[in-house]
Image: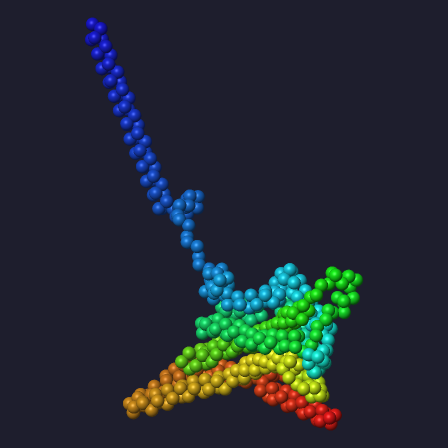
Length: 506
């Protein structure tokens, strides 16, 4: 009886569980059908009322991926990603790296306070203290050379203009770094690369390399000649004693052993000469480099004035106005330097000529080598500035003729096309034009303002260039070949006057 009861209980339990499971499934089905009906009713309401649709979209915006970041325009793009700055702002391939290294080695870097302090200390030591101390330590020795006294005189005459030009150049560089901030702003390479053409940008590196090679070509040969002359001067012409300040110190003689004063004077004099000459030639090369870079920009305008380039007059006007602004800035930056160099070199050359001609001692390389090397370096640097300024000035004046040719070529081409089209018309075309004369006149009247406006814009551009063709100016005086001829005549007049005085004195 017990097994029968257990089996009956199991069957009843299974039936109960199956009933409960069927009820749960039915509930789930009913819930799903009610959910679907509710969703259908919501969709119908959304389709019938767009206002409710917009409200639901505002409440529950769809999940979408964020849009890709917009590409910044070239003017707002980072400098390292801008192709115009990709080369010039790099550190490894910096075109001005040679000049920066030269400034650091010559202690002319004014970018930091420490560099500025070291620069002023080096200037006071190498440009003022060392030449004065060496000049005071020279003694004439007739046993070495009969022209020992005249050699000392010539050496002191040569030290004055070298120190003066070094002072003018040093303070010019200091003013550049103080007002502009660096070499890129001085050479107009900071923000002008974006506005220059590809032809002009390609010529930058070439001109920069040429400028540094020119600086080395002027400095190294003159350094070799100056070192050879100083060796002969200190060891074979004069004697060198301790300066009066060092000899007057209250030290016993044992504390001042025998010092090779000639070797010390030789090294100090050569170092001072390299510093003073390097500063002067560096400013001259920077001025010439600025003029050459502006010449490249004028070449870019020449390419724009080609008939095949089809450049608009407004573009040429904007480019020329930008270059003219840079030329005016260059003139204001270097005019004091050029005038001071002109006065210093003129006075020094005429004074040296008077001293040499009035001396009755024999002239040789050992006693007049200072004047020879100093005059060659000073005239080379100054002529470099004058020729660079005259070249860019004549480039600026030449653009008037090129623009006139460009304007005339376009006018001739337009007249040639109109004459050829009128000659090729046939009699039937003429009859048809007579019939529709009023319509053709109206069409031609509507098409006429375009060429007329282009002609007026070109004519206005030529007139503007005719009245704004100046280049480098010195307080209003254009530095061209005419001014160079005037300076040459003035200098020649002074030389002839000094020669006449020397002849009368003799």
